[in-house]
Length: 604
Ligand code: M6R
Image (tube, rainbow, N blue to C red; front, side):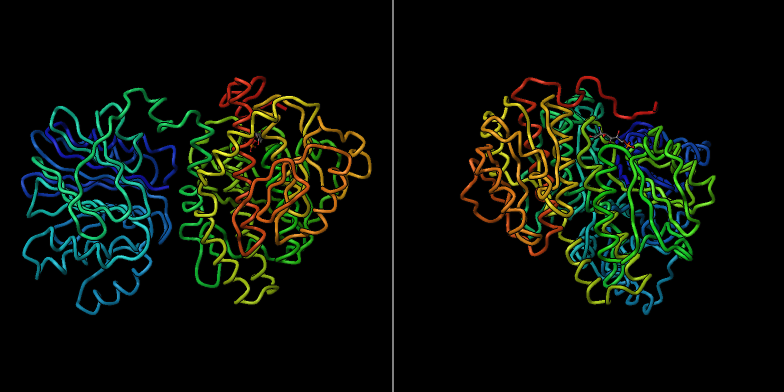
């Protein structure tokens, strides 16, 4: 995903910008650029591909003395990854970098084009710089023009803008995309879309809030809120230790990764949702031609995401779908039909069994698609097509945000297939898209629920085992909940379809058997409830997770009301992640690096 850096000071600006961008590289990008303003003159460099290309392009450029600069790594959303589409975008005497999406860009572009403005790129971002210059013609100051510009933008943005008239100044604005402002004892000012770019350079920072905008010069910083009221500058110290700073105040990477799922899912959705269609720019429209069946293949958490997809693909797109555990698939001499699309799912893109299965499918002549978090990984390079999940680096061995992004991509893909195959009507797809848009707020951690989980975790530290149970997509979620708990608490846990309990597992029921019951309001509520009652009647200790009261439960975690079962799925996912983490914390385990496990399993 895109990254932003900015600098005001006297050190060699090019290196500072490129070093900052390098710290953001992990987010993935396909082009990069910098603009430097010194003595009212601009120097602009852009390159497609990795930062090394940008370094080569700007090799001869050196600056001494005071300057301001902005830099960007771009992950293409509107328009292909080309040099013209790379940021910074320029007007006649201004330059801008932007993360997010300007939703009303077409409207603004039409207005500006009608006034004779020429656009060079296909991006939404370019409207910002032209709109600014348009307002500059009538404004009293460049800052007034910037304020007007920001007031007319709809959508999500983090913006830095520089203008040749004011060559000691960076204008900035934040709404829905992160932006951090930092300074140090050497009177330097920095900007970054993540504090990774600022660690070691600044001693204190302000995490800008939505609606914040302002102006930074070599002598001052002025900040306003969304109602145009001045905001007092309240800096917080920035840790110098990269590792603890990267945890951003959370106890563990896993906790941080659970909490950042809202931001991460906004990235996953970015540029992919239109009013009535889901759009994966990276997919060749012919990918689904001649396909009558889908086979998904993965390991661990990614396998659970694949299981969710079997429900969604068959339900939404009425296409035959099956799922395979990669380590089994590769040795069971499977029959593969040429009209099957083979889809592998992997956070790392390096898991040995999944990679080998992908090779087998390719060898058998199947079309292949990978859903992956790591660009340029072995699977991404090998598959015919790839969709990146955009989760950012996941450090906790227990996968959380990677799972959330995988399921989100698979849900979107089910809709792409549904419209390709003309199964769902446009209004039904539009409704699903409306639901998808709410995901970032659905996965935001509810502090009250987290506190409740922290307290009740003390009752779940012993016993002879856990059953996580659910139906439909809540069955793979139950498997995932059980896997999370096993991985970091080292307690025995199993996931089961709730209807299957009476076929054997219920024999284990007693007060020392803990049942974690997923009871969504909108998917088979009564059926699941009966199954949980059967366990309760046999004195199993029940912890129910539901928006509806359940009087047979020993503990009840009340989730919020949602209008659709998939939204209930995502909120329950967060509850299960937090529950496992709090149990592991109480047991004193290493949450981020549990015993015996590795983040990337490159051996079979
Ligand atoms: O990188 P992958 O998604 O291919 O990894 C697959 C599994 O190793 C992984 O999901 C594992 O199960 C996680 N530790 C689960 O938290």
